Amino acid sequence: MTPTLVRNQLGADASTPADAGTRARDWAEIQERMLAPLYEAVYDRMEIGASTRMLSLGCGSGLAMLVAAARGAHVTGVDSDRERLALARARLLPDAGWDDAPAHSRARLVADGGPAPAGADGAPYNLITVFEPIGCVAGDSEGLVPALRSAVPLAVRGAAVVLTGWGPPERCATAAVLQVAARLADTARPPRTEPGRWRPTLRDDLEDVAARAGLKPDGSGRVSCPFGYADVGSAVRGLLSTGLFDAAVRATDRSQVEKEVAEALHPYRREDGTVWMPNVFRYLVCVT
Image 1 (spheres, rainbow, N blue to C red):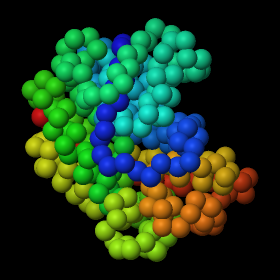
Image 2: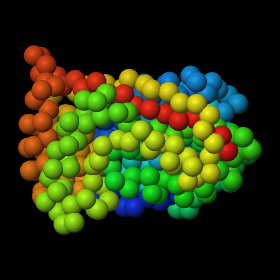
Image 3: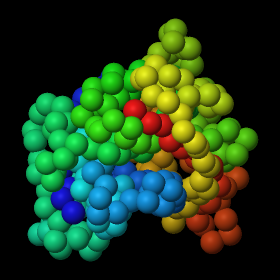
């Protein structure tokens, strides 16, 4: 199994916090693991194994790649966030020192440009995944459609493409907390047109992306991904690392956003101080 990492721009730039490294580390250490059930469910359905040559668009800090590589897949990762990509490289290199790094994996990092024209083993990709969920932020799919159009020609005919998104707001406890982002972002002008502003998930968000990218839907599923945190402070750090509160930070300031998010988390705080929010995420399987 050969992980490959490529830096590439998938969409519009989000606001960059003063310490991008801390934000990336918060994502890798706190938030990214919340989506692990989604990764596993997709890999089970797609029967990921040694014959899989996967291109991961928006690979983040590499957890989804690590899980696929552990199943024997050849994986290539693309992301625009330099800090997250550096953490992915550290995870996937055999001498990185991470407890979960596969000792026999190899990583190749390309500083700029799009994904390589073939998988790490020299063959075209037969699976493209997008594990950065869409559907609750205005404009969050605009960069994804051209990225998919660029990636599809690198895959074999009939390759699978898996898109992921947030489930219905009524099935996602975190939606109530994300509404804080919408309320605070409303202090900006014009409030409802700024990219990055939270909005309720729509039923056909994934199908709309597939249609615009020229993909044919071929099945879907829903996966329970509860967000669990050791305490409110960890929850605030994890949630802000997602980028879903960037518009609110731009409209007010980070300390104000942190304070109001902490208050919104109180209904989900348990007696032992931990925070638990049940959520459902959706995936759509398409073919090229």
